[in-house]
Length: 450
Image (cartoon, rainbow, N blue to C red; front, side, top):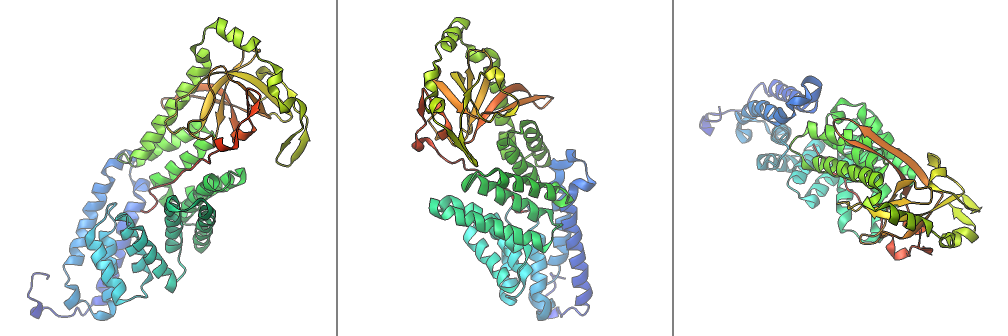
């Protein structure tokens, strides 16, 4: 019909039936994409976009068979343009045709919330954050809806890199609040839960590393997992993998990154994360097993010259940690530590070597004491370029000891480590680490707009 001269075209009489048919087909198209892995094996991941685009092209042809300005009645023209633009916009990359249709739709009907939201997603694909933000805010002027709310939560986090330190906290809290409101709109929407989890994850790193925040993050991801739409998205696995990595649940993190790679073979971040994490864990295992490749005689001299005077204030002063005040620390050997928390105890050991970590987080080094037991120490929030060198004596109060082990086709590692969230609690050669050596870990999540 599009090839006929315009003066021979007339308004469509059965427009209601046509609009309903197009709406149903559009819904089926998005369902086909969103639930692809519910109906296809993950081995078909590399073909997903091709399969979706083939179905998209068929529906595009139907939309393009109508001359919008001549055949579609004005009363439904905005809705038609919205659906046509949404059809174009199903692709993972920016499509200028979608932008044209959606821009016309909101001009014809500024109250069309769905068109504002779709236009916002279109701008995001074109890396235009300001226009995307304006579009989602335009949708919220007419209706509080979860898509606009969670999209603004994402944009707030993406903008945080340009904010002053004093402005970051309020932006992160606002991101969490918007995501929580989106979840409240539909508690079964896993994508909103996933966005909430990402907001908590960023709040944890960029505001305060409160373990309770990380628990809220993992809880949100668990809720997202119940929704097959969210579970089929590689970003949920990727971002959950990031959270698991910083929780030092390394085996689970590797599995998450691996599944993210399988769901989207062309997406590079999970490939890099998986490779870097496996390399880090392999190096940690080797460092502990070989004791830094130092000769036995040198190690013997190193441990024999450990002087308890280097416990410094931890030998004489009372220690305060969180809600626990005025604790008298007792010096123990590495072989006396128990798995988990060791309250009221302090270790003193020499550094055998460190791991070159591309991410620089955490700064990891191996220590040994007179018991000749060797473990890793992972220090978070230590300023880049800071750290310790071979031979330094390090005191760690109330160490938390964990065994990390995995033996599978994905990775093989086996070592014990002590986690230190705040480098300022450490004593290096008897002296407290300076405050200017503290630098908060920052992390971002990506790939959230589908």
